[in-house]
Amino acid sequence: MSLEQQVLSTFPSVENIPAPFALSEPLEYPHYLINGEILTWSGEMEDVYSPIEILKNGVYEKALIGRCPVLDAEVGLQAMDAAVAAYDNGMGRWPTMSVADRIRHMEDFCSSMTEKRDEVIRLMVWEICKSAKDSAVEFDRTVEYIRDTIDALKDLDRANSRFTIEKNIYAQIRRAPMGPVLSMGPFNYPLNETFATLIPALIMGNPVIVKAPKHGKMLLAPLVEAFRDCFPKGVVSILFGDRRLVTPIMKTGKINVLAFIGASTSADALRVSHPHPHRLRCVLGLEAKNAAIVLEGADMESTVQELLTGAFSFNGQRCTAIKIIFAHKSRVDELLERLCEGVGKLKVGMPFDEGVNITPLPVPGKTEYLNELVRDAEAHGARVVNEGGGTVVKSLFYPTLLYPVNSEMRVYHEEQFGPVAPVASFEDERDAIDYLVQSNYGQQVAIFGKDPDQIAELIDPLVNQVCRVNINSQCQRGPDVFPFTGRKDSAEGTLSVSDALRCFSIRTLVAAKGNAGNKALLTAILRQRQSNFLSTDFIF
Ligand code: G3H
Image (cartoon, rainbow, N blue to C red; front, side, top):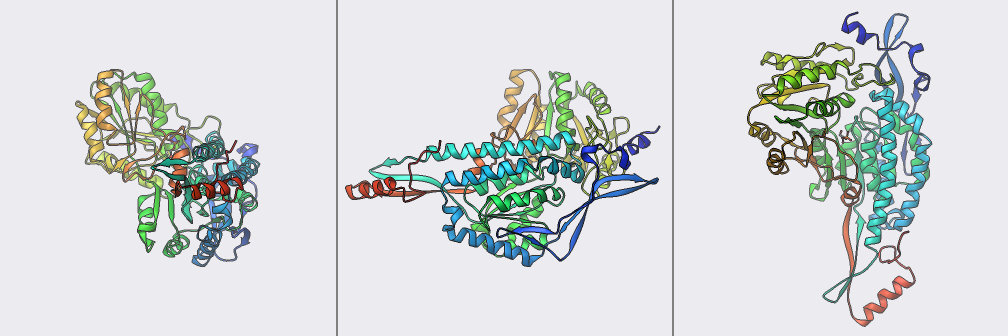
């Protein structure tokens, strides 16, 4: 059987789909959440298809997963009004609620959400083709992120539940909400990275309008009721649509924080739609082109393992994926040989297949784009070094290693966001450093080697190019308590469990000169617990 036939044979017929993922009737979901109400949309609807085609009576057909609304500007403005009303210029119930009470709402949401685990995972598997195992990891990591966020807020609140006295001024310094937030996550982590901004924004007292990702949107549907039931009205809106929905929201000038993870072109377009950009705080996770640098002394066995996971997990569709490999000239042949062997063992198939590594790509036109990158690299002197590399069967792109790549090639500069790993060789490490200096991106780098002198010499220049230098380890965001950010076109703002709480709040203080009258006044307010802000209560 040819490779094409083998790959094609992984596309299932209805009977071959494992029971927990069996295709049911498409999920008809003409709903959205605004102002505490789940409303029904009677306008344009979108058919949501899986990248998986199913064999029926000898013919492959795209699997229809469901239908959801394409909401318009009017709905966007209604959501904006609801968020503005819930915020009520910072005087609404949610922004003035005590931290302990907001935490209780979030805990309720977290337990309701876990009841929907299987349904969310199933939709993620079908819509973006993340493997069943990784989809489950994404769900569980998100629940853990909510719990960690609650703990981090308790810590923050405990640290702030005391007064600071400086130059006879008594002050209580806390973090206060910013106001309405627009939160938009990406297709590759549609749950986790939507929640990575939604959850901290909410728990800090802001109302949030969520626009579901372009792909990976249906999985929000099972969670809409929990949002309605667990938060006061207007505090969360869940919307489905495109730029016709979000641009008018931005144009109102009433969004105070834009939390966006995706392409910089879209982030820029949204930011400039705001009539007062200086009032808009942006928390952005954008493109990256993380490099791996394999030094002369690298332990090839572990290096290859890290490179394979780094470049090919979820088909290379991670912003942190290793997107170019620089290998020392003396080791490049050995590296390529081992990488080819490793890539040959990656299992290509459907996301519900046991042990699968490479799955169909959800973005329409992606296989054509990757093919263009490969053709362009070949035209400039690179070759596909692994057997089967560059093979395309429907939405599946067989993992591909390209060597030797150089600066003439598009793949050297562009973020491929797919299962293509370009490899270049160097004699002087300075070439790899220069690549990062010249790059428009500045997220992470991974260095592989054993010589402490050589590694130390790279660390100091590289920490000023990127925001995480990984040693003998692939690039990654987690653990989520670590700061995650980037320089240049890669990010704005820092996300981590605790940093995110800061992104969606502003330091605010109540201060009084320490005279007898003020001391008596502050004591009275505290004793009678008259303020949620001015309070020395300790959250246990
Ligand atoms: O797509 C970008 C993600 O933030 C990467 O996260 O390193 O946990 O896969 P990860």
